[in-house]
Image (cartoon, rainbow, N blue to C red; front, side, top):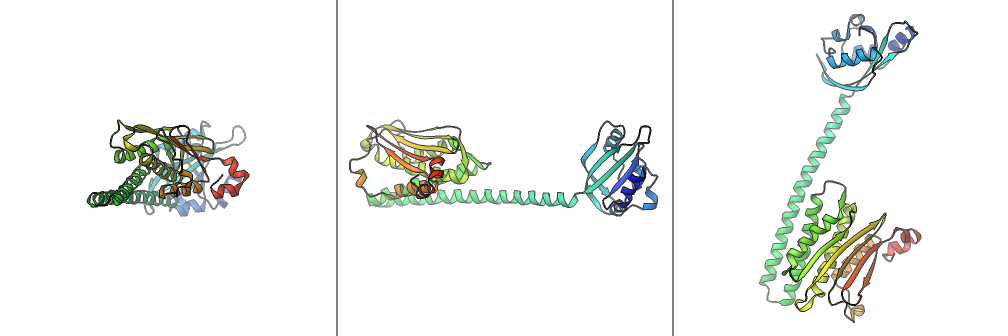
Length: 343
């Protein structure tokens, strides 16, 4: 008992020593200062009578009585308290039954931590995060609107021009802008840090098909992807690769009204993954190796290099299969190849 009194008396933290009936045996000086309590009037009073009755909390009393009976222990019980001068404060209460010899009176050691400032900081952080989310949502809305306006202006310009070559280039630009808009919309609706690729590619391909496939009965575009997810940054690069490869297939694989299909595939095993775009069109031209790479090819090569992936092109019999392959094992064994985009 004398040891408990010494601990309370020397403590710099708010402490109370209570008996089994929740009457105060001793109170630390920091408790009296922190809760505006007269040290000469607190000892011998019941906990609920301290101050102006702000400690008279039925739930706290029940928990303390259970602790005194040995049936429970109060561990980080959080409650709000409104004092006469300090206003509303957030407190964390801990209480434990002190073990004495058999037959000795029951004593409870109650500690109080004022976490008002910490909770206020957390609230401010939450408010800032909410404000940031609102601003980001507004930014995404404005970006989406801007992309739609740009696409409309490009399409109108394509209709007005008399040059067939210019019209083709403008329609290509329109398709790319619409694809970027689809990317932006899909990423904006993702609340998590990880983006699910199957629905992401599906939505992207729907947008490309709507703007470039005029006869769905003749040409089909579908997605075959597993349940993989990846970060938002990587998903943007993958989405742009898919856009360029699909647009290229639509432009060159089915000349003269030829029918067919394009399939976007994705599969992963641990850190290794493969993205494919395959078609059953006319295949690669004989002089493809000597042809000058176009803008779309350059974009795909740059994005693959950024992802430390290699590009594989196959033309088996009919159609073309273009694969973007990421292999962590090869990248680890030969980092210089990964950096060069040939890993």
